[in-house]
Image 1 (tube, helix red, strand yellow):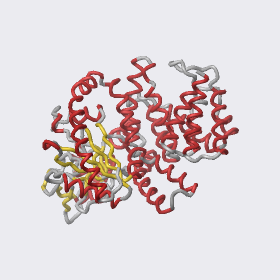
Image 2: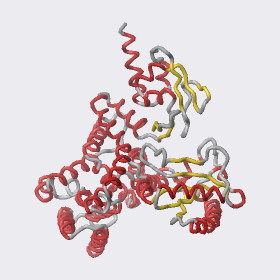
Image 3: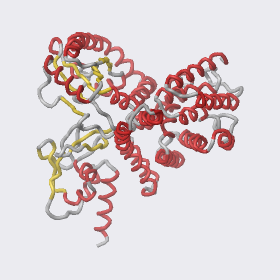
Image 4: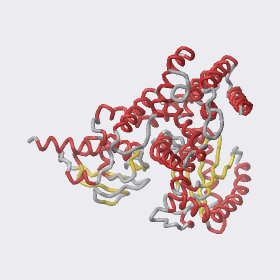
Length: 501
């Protein structure tokens, strides 16, 4: 086992050297590895591995996300205090204030356990987690890497513990990774949880989907050959990757009332992702695809480059008729957009590291920083809730049903995009646009048609709030169907003011 751990450590060192880290950096990582082994001396995981292996694997995941050296070292040390023989003073003395502060932050986040919504300890830990995130987002990124490795090795635990950890992963850590724009991490966490939490459904999806995956892959293979030739003729350098929809994601879609397990209604069971060098190439590729394969009628092109999703995601999606009239989805993006889509806010640190080495210019970093800012606005919102929400149950509801719920993206008539929880209504939209807009609501149009204010919004809806000339008081009935914390809070505030007169 000792030999195996040293081999794994050497793999990490090779990765760090490939990423451009110098000898002085490697010395620091060596020091952390020796410290971790000493802190966990004689400890074994249930799998029989040395305990220090978990920290090492966590550090390797963090390195694969290209986070900074400090995060990699913290990944290696994160368990040495809670589960090892070290204490924070040891880490402060050996590695300094920044690393000891991050280890302390990860330790705080690690104490979160999903119990009941009435469990004060759970709620207080949630509060601490979001405060830690607001101070230094690397805390939660390191925790995500820790959770990802734990999920990969979950099978050694008793079934009841597996279920508990998988539930926590799906309720907190998978949504967190999505909000941070880390699509690859979110997908893997959900996939690892799926067979544990829904074993029958997992078996059904995997049993029934095989033939559809195969047919879709064959269709894309034929299209790929044609398109590669066309792109070459036009002088556009591309790479085409075929992405299969994961079983969990497929199951969620099959369960939708408009799909009802009809595989023929799922056009992206296998999608083709086209990677190019520049934004200009993205639009050139879209034009070529539409020239040779007829696009679907109606609005089936989603341009998330011109209008990125609020979590920073950028890509162009289009659906076309492929061989035998079957529909195929294409996703077109630059290599940088793909890196950001897979690793989200973590990619920001990769660019910062490159900047320090002179491998990326200030304009690129500024651009990256802008998308990171949009991904983090909700983190600041969570931090502000700490002081606003005193009631524990209200705080938990706000976190679960607003901050970490499944999201939809809706648009204003001007094309501004708004990120709302699933189940939101035009009232939620109005308060998301501006808190004062809620005082003037007389009605709402969705995609040009008038709907009741209780209408549930769908992904991609264009919402227009019809305003009255004079300020109106919110209706108490709105509280029965609004979803977002800001809408509930503003409505209650107005109703309380009314009751005083």
